[in-house]
Length: 234
Image 1: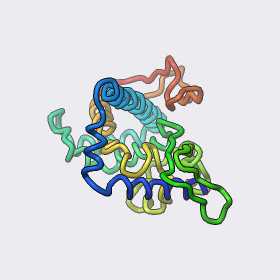
Image 2: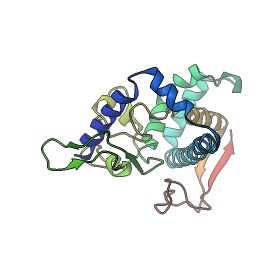
Image 3: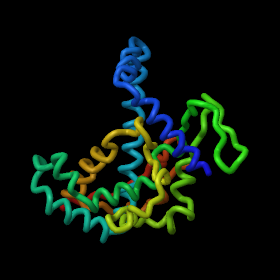
Image 4: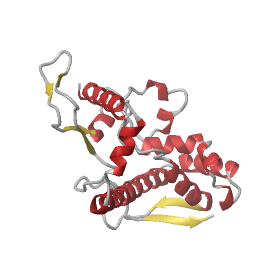
């Protein structure tokens, strides 16, 4: 039910936000001074924390599963010969790496997002009313670990996002960075580049002190203090 509500809000938001280019330009021009500084700061802070969480969880999972790590490395060596070859086109064509990152993002970096309905509405088949401008909170971690949408969601399985299986994913059940016109653009590009540069030259293994990297007390899904991995130069 929550997914249906969210999907409708995304559609309404998309329809309203892209009516005219002038509207977008007017909104952008409205930022100045402290408001503009605040927007720049949130881009930096949010991007840093979510990227750290995603990279840590990806390396943790690949350290636990050496065969998957080997497959990513082989794909990397096949595509990239040296650091100068780490281009957008090269990274974009690394399908298995993309699958690994998507599977990692079932640990959504931000566990909850909110959206504001543009008008009052009643969700079909229920008596639930979405009030205009009253936020609806969407629990991403709950959706992305729901057995109705993902078989064995806590098992790390990059094949879930393979060409053969990804079309079975229900729309609006994979939302690591939201959905709609304000979804983070090219959100896996930096993750791919970082993982490529690490795994091309290093073998990653679990440190003897390892434990589950997810700390549920943090605002962002992130590793606890002192989480360690071993890196061996290849």
